[in-house]
Length: 455
Image (cartoon, rainbow, N blue to C red; front, side, top):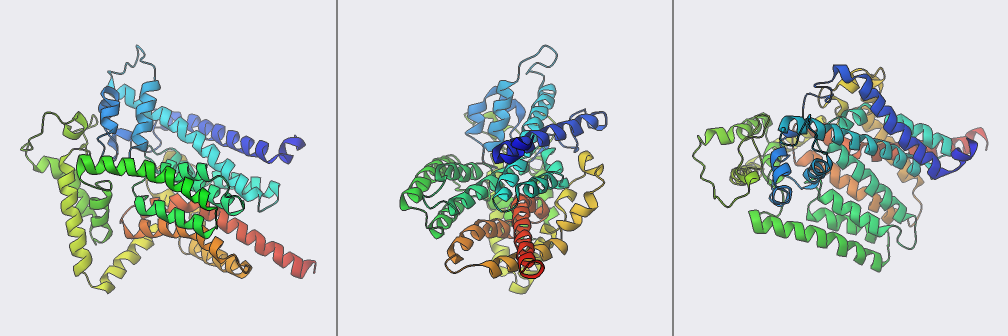
């Protein structure tokens, strides 16, 4: 047993396995209380705004994935692959759409549980280079107990996948910082490309922002060139497809609904407009018969609108116009108040985003919610930043800026580009924030111990 804990990779593997098993056991223990024996939240993946219909993914997966405009295709690609892998049983054949949906979401939650364990492993690997290994293991397990981790690991959208990819990409960037030969730049490039294909906030500027981080880290030019070759090729092909098919260089909802909500004092108004848009057309929409079904479908199988319907391209263009008008005509002071309101939502407990059965049974939830929300969380971040600046050595300014830049970008986009779900976006960075805060407080404690306790 001692040998296991002396080996960093063995310990990381153990933490990942324990985390995955523990999450599945907790879900099994609550199975009789779950909705339909699957859902800890009262929401399935078909009900999400940003998912394609399960029937379109089943019947025409490639055609459907090539014609998604509302969000990047990663989540629906995962859903399509799961559907392809699921056996067509006699009890729940693929033609039984509702039965297939239950099996799909159950498989998705199993995949999220694996990512849950892997996040614990990455947190440990990162902290084990900054703290004693036993302390890193304790901290990794403490983070796995974070209520928001359990919430989004049982939520059928791509939030958990996004947080996992951000943590992984940040860890790889930190590894590059500590490797004079450029480090794992290929894996880093793949991670950035995966983020681009998963979350709308990682548009083309983000690709070059990460390149700027590499330059600030003084990565070899060849490494930066490799990074740009991989990321620009992947993102260029996707953006070219989007412009060719839809005339946009982004996803439709991000450049319409999200931005309109971000500067509105009544973001719920835009949600009402969005949900009722097809109904208010009174069936007068005429569709080109050559369009794939995912662009013509008006309702998904759970009686929610198909927001990937081609008509939403027009609506989002109108909403983008409203956003630009509001942005140009609203007094600066009022805009500042709106953005401060967005920030106030951002710093609410992320575990409170939606009721969740797993989170509701946790006796330690109140402690974590206090630590991960305003004012305690802001104070912890501020003190950690102060410690980091105090410890900054000559010549490290560029490397520090390289690590801060992506996090600052994600934070600003999360606050400036939507209103209402900002606390969910905070979870994207919470694993990175956790590592940063723990590492800085640990460094400060060691400094005080050396200077005061044992000078």
